[in-house]
Length: 484
Ligand code: NAP
Ligand code: MG
Image (cartoon, rainbow, N blue to C red; front, side, top):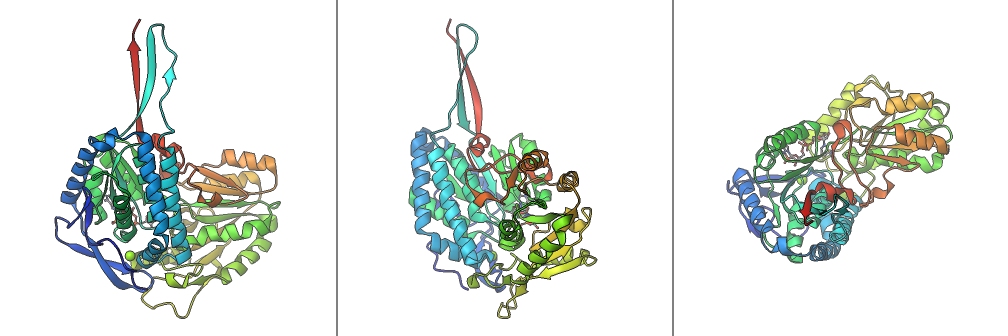
């Protein structure tokens, strides 16, 4: 698969409303993970480019953008959402070539990006302060104001969705944004800039600087001109981001992945559960922060369910993004070696089933056949650590208390689901599980943009998506007038 015709430059930064070469003059290669072939080059942005982008955002926040009524900001976002919809096919092809996402999944990401822009476009003028009854002679009210310049550091697994949810919400609140995409997944981030430009955003409101994490990413997270950082990625880098933010005393939103469980009780509707149980683990080749990598199964139905899960796994097909199968390649040779390393550490475990890499899959692609591991102890490394590949472990349990204890036994707490027809158990489990989202008799709820999302524990803190994100991307001022 080659990259489709692009209508914007891919080897430049988008700063202050224009396409500019990186100060280094250097570029980095882009790889197609389905084939291993080089398909282009991106700018190697660094500190100087981040300085320019932050300066542009600083200027923009005091310019016409600051005076634009909230409904006009919303209108721009909604208009941009409509433009994204006209580019869905191209965006899907670009993402498929750049990150190896099967075309249907890439298309869903592009449609989700449009939904985020529409949602936050509609929300922009519906969030406001309050009046507070206070002492006689006072009038007190609150103003909800933008932070100013927001930095967005996003990973390669769902670039369009993560840009939509974080940059979309930040813009709705009137911030000016500097976006640093992952070096493996810059093309749709640059398309985002091109479409924003087409939509008519004032210059400097949206800036995109591709480059390496330790160069452009670190420069952005340490920049004293940035007022808020939104980061999605790994725990070690999230820790660095929070440390850098602490030195500038600015707030951060961290979304750091998980080890999300699905609890399946003996009274669950297994026909309904089965597709969710597997899809939640293998979608995007398991490279999903909210992937369900642990299946906790009530012992009375364990053997029966394992057999049905295994049958489903045997039918999974893996191949290039263009073949649009169940599973595509991993993002890189490095990610494949991380996942292979985990599988080597699980060599003592029982392989219940594997999917199949199709014979025609290009040899240079980074493929791993999905693996279902059975009889896994809850304290095994593969039951505790985030693998970020198409691997699920099945852990048996005897009763509800044990299921909850296992569910809560990792450092993470992003999402979880409970499969049971017992209403009281549904309510008890939803309260007892440590997670930012709990699903009952489903997993993911279709990913709705309206649903606040984020973690507890090492899954991070702060919430994106829904109205809740708008509070995170704004600050509250209290005004108390003494008028007698
Ligand atoms: P990562 O290193 O945390 O990268 C996430 C983002 O942070 C990328 O844009 C990256 O840029 C940037 N970055 C890297 N080092 C930085 C630094 N020192 N300062 C500022 N920004 C920096 O994640 P990864 O290496 O892509 O993936 C490794 C593991 O992270 C995965 O195996 C998975 O466990 C986890 N992960 C989680 C999520 C999630 O959705 N929660 C997403 C991706 C990965 P560059 O990529 O350009 O270096
Ligand atoms: Mg790529």
